Length: 82
Image 1: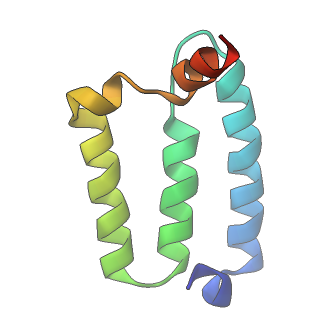
Image 2: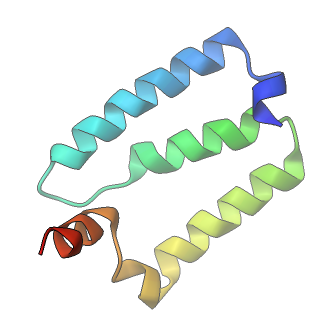
Image 3: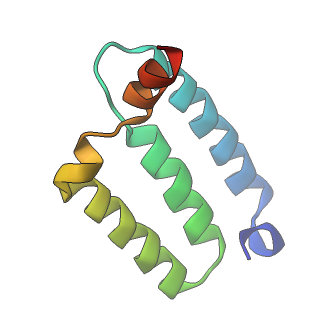
């Protein structure tokens, strides 16, 4: 859905967010701001309020669920490296 609607400016914004995620992944402190922004930008590019709301709700669940807090991408990489 997003691919059919996305503008060149939105693609450029996604590229910048990919760079920001790369930087975030190098930080000692776990942060997923750019990751969330990336997924929200894709959702918004669909021009579909239902998709946007669903992605917002999923990120909310991820940030409030005790189970999701135990499993961050960086912890997953550490587990697979063992």
